[in-house]
Length: 411
Image 1 (cartoon, one colour):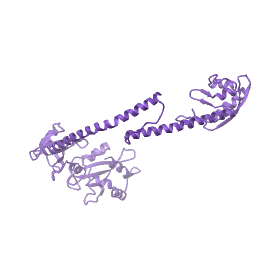
Image 2 (cartoon, one colour):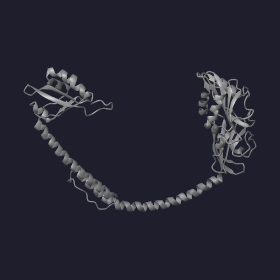
Image 3 (cartoon, one colour):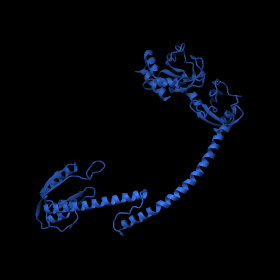
Image 4 (spheres, one colour):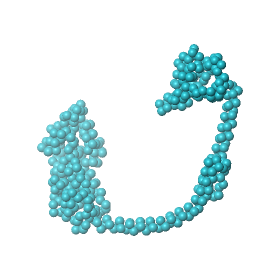
């Protein structure tokens, strides 16, 4: 219905119904709507007279539909209306239609109408619902409780016929009494399972039924098969699990105890002994490889740190960092040494650092050097720092941001 409404909006231009050739071309190319409506599509002008249809059917053009209640309702509400089953004026056969208004841009004026027609005696979207039975022995019907008629039925030839007195009326009576599902007596006098649902917009009810005996037989047979298979699987799995636990848990427990002892420091870090080429053996092998890699990394890291320390001492280079979030400045030992202070003699924050910078250099440092750093660019500056003896020492500082927040701002 939403698709039909969307299509209807394309049939007007500048608050006027498009010309017949343009509408006919649009109908001819709308294959999706062709598949939905077995009776085709009909376009009416604002006087509710049919002007264009698809497929083109003799005597369907020029019919006045203004006396139809659904047309009058569309004019009053300016909304789509789904009709009850009726005999079509053009097709002269039982059908129902979806009547959608063609509205002006502001939605206040009805410029015309478009019908999507479904013939109840042919395959259509309702017949597709009827075909959704459990098998050929199932039965599906759609009824209109207000008119007390069949809308469609999986049995042929019942469209628009009254259901009163029919053998299926037992299921219908139970559904109309408020029982949406349960058991009833079918047209052959046998017990059937049934379920129902309402199509609220149309006021119709869909009822599907299936012989109870046929429904129970597969369930019963399937239950026996599943029970037998389950018992066999449980016995087999119990034996297999007992065997695997006995085989796997002992070496796994030994390996975990050894690893825990090394983690606690009660035993030196060493390779584990591998006993079998199984899952535990693979785990032990992976641990040994990880341990070997860690040893290499630790040795390389110690060598690198030692080279770095000797380089910093030889070049009298200090390393410092500034945590902007917590306003905390960290110096390494060389920074304190070059200024004559004992190592880690005091803690630094923004104010303490400002006080150590020569007054003539403070503006340059905080106005030039720091903004460059905060803009994620490398910066370099020369300024004087106060030494432990009270003198001023020229230093050269280079740096760039290394940590950023979610907004890519240095932190």
